[in-house]
Length: 92
Image (tube, rainbow, N blue to C red):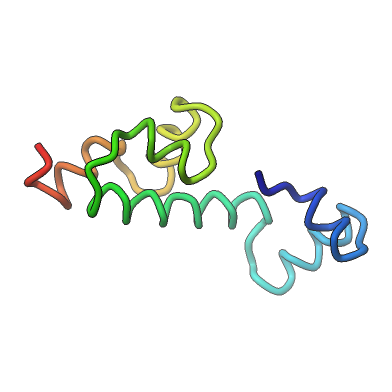
């Protein structure tokens, strides 16, 4: 579990100040950046592993399958099953 609060505390910043600095230097909100990195890892797993979508969601840090599916679709334009069909056709 990666939280803004934990990272800010680790480096001695308030949540607000860390969030502001993170956005200033990366042009991403902290939560959007973490979600993007999780989806990037999930895409690689969908293409290269035989793991179920539920296993992948858990492996990349999502607590619920529905939030994984929602965020995945927001970031990629399709759901994880469709992504797997498109980019790893032998898995079907």
